[in-house]
Length: 347
Image (cartoon, rainbow, N blue to C red):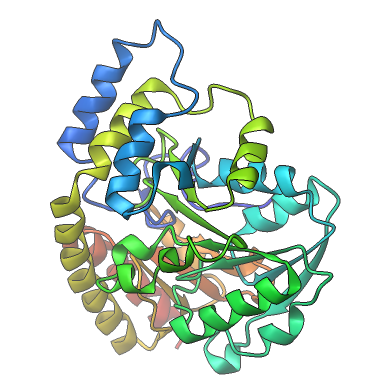
């Protein structure tokens, strides 16, 4: 079984740096909305998520008919694959495991485009040659998980054009763009109305610390595709508390802006201290850091009650690569103490 981040249930009393969740937690307005939602749970949820889709559309400046909601982004990944039933798909490596996992459920042949360590795991133009008329679906993550590296807007535009030529559906996972100051300018939303070969994944999970509530959404102008996705799913996939919490979260723009500013400061602090210890860190842009360290680092940190993400099980990565979330200054200092001990043990 693929091991994900955030597995606090297998490890008791740990400080969790393995899941990329906003350390500030859920905004109070979102908590209150979720609690209020419980009072309405004697009723079935709105299967169309009408109020939620309206608010998301207003936030994203798209049409409500271009929005589909799901039980987290992972739910939409699986539903999209079931709706499309691709025979051949292209994914980058390393990348989020659920792309591969979903594709395997429909017996899809998966082609891997490996990101090269020598090039900082940055996606290059050679991916254009990997997309052919046989490619039914392409999954990209921007910024990538686990590397945190962004794809250049120019290359994304070229990829979209290539997918259009090959009649390939391009799915871009933008779940971490909320943490970037220039995230809005990097989004592919501007191409939604002009290209039906585009599907964008988003979620409230990371920025608004709603991992346990499960709420994600997709954006597409292909209404036929959205209808097929809806027909592939059970009708009540998004609970009333999740829908009401999502409406509140979509309006928390100031919380998101403050979080970006605070997290950027803490990420820079963490990176500076870790580089002084000799760790090799790639220039990620989201709320996590991707770095290389001693082979026993996961064990050393766990002995100190700290859970980090060992990325050795990602396709395209070798042992010794890790990912850590950016947390509060106090928590970051606790992590740094463990990292310093591990560095000294390996010198």
